[in-house]
Length: 347
Image 1: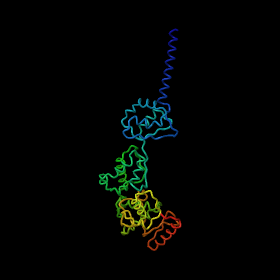
Image 2: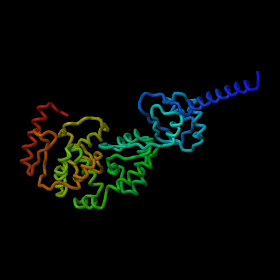
Image 3: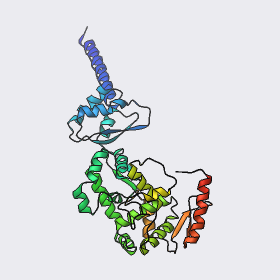
Image 4: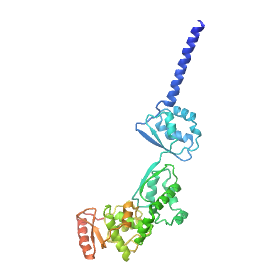
């Protein structure tokens, strides 16, 4: 065999080897390496996670972990000090794309509203970010934080303004709490503080009253009128006599916040609790729920009228009948009681 033939064969072997090597490199780096049917998945990687924990987190979504591992090491990902966060992996991504995605922490659109208790709220938040409910409760009730920000354990729920907020998944409890305190101060502008003062209320008191309005009616267009009734009572020193506060008092005393109470009974009015506004004058010590912004605005911008009483309507369901005098109210009340009885609602 002459030298030209040997050179030709060697060239073919080298080219073939390069093609095979190139294919292997392409397969390892650029061929799709996902293993799920959805269009995309999110992977949560905990704080202080090492590379082995990352691999464990992504393993259910990776077709070939050896290929993933090879590319990760080539891109020096295992040496990356900060790995925690929420990361997006799209169907069909190759190992290179996946590693790049694991470097981009995707924020969570965190939402909350209408939580009755701090414990419920902590559970709601704990289901959306890394901080668990226990660490959140501890942060919310930290005595130093409460003192510095003018809250108590009873009224700190007023600090949380229902809305949608952007957080990184790996936010800890204190950072979440401090951000919420900042959002609270942002909400309570000079204008809103002045409006609360015009009703002889502090921002916290306005939030407490708003929680009653929020629970009293789901109709947002009626909330300013309901707020006006309670402010009429409050300004004259009358007891608020709000059924939602009695329901809250009954639940709090029993420790069962899951019970459904559709009808307030006379015996409920005897529940000895500072939340029972039939028994105690003034506002409860804290919100009976987390009022949304429409309820807060209703208290700050109440409808001006002379109504002192109101009762659920039996002709315009969801709304209420309003009255100036006890006699007018008694007519409305009897209609409502008759309707409730006809429906067989006993509790």
